[in-house]
Amino acid sequence: MRSTIHHDLWIGSLMCLVSAVLLMQTGKMPSGSAQFPKVILGCFIAFGLWIVYKGIAKTLLLRKGFGEKVKDKPLELRQMARPMACLLGVIAYVAIIKITGFFVASTIFTLMFMWLYGLRSVKKMLVITFGMDVFLYVLFVMQLKVQLPEGILNLM
Image (cartoon, rainbow, N blue to C red; front, side):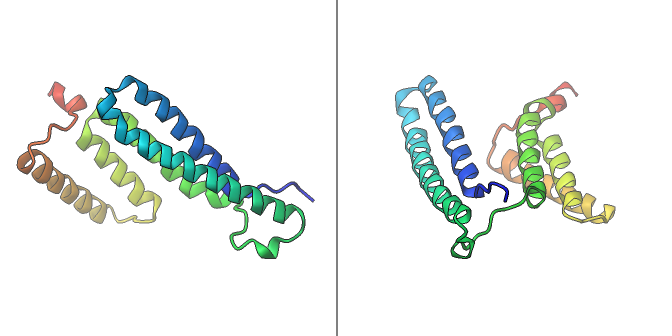
């Protein structure tokens, strides 16, 4: 019998680790500005610890043969492929915004996710993406006067 670790244990641990790293980064912020992120990250750590606790309990039940008492069965790696692709896509999107600019990154991100989730009509993809770009431009640039990252568009 293979050793089973419930996915809540991994998720809670990762949540605590990421929150702790970000909490350390708040030390570089002015004290007044750092209060809100510290409170939120403290809550994330507390929730992460709760998830770890529940994950340990579920793992122990699974290992002792009481799997029927665990409502959410452990996920297999293949079940996590699409959510992990989404996570990596969002990380890549955030990383390329400064390089390519908000609108170029958002266009690439939107097209990739529509393709990933099964929309194969190029016409629909282009209409939706163009409509989104126009809407975001009108809302943020024209109405709210928000300075969005220009990236390579600044060179033109």
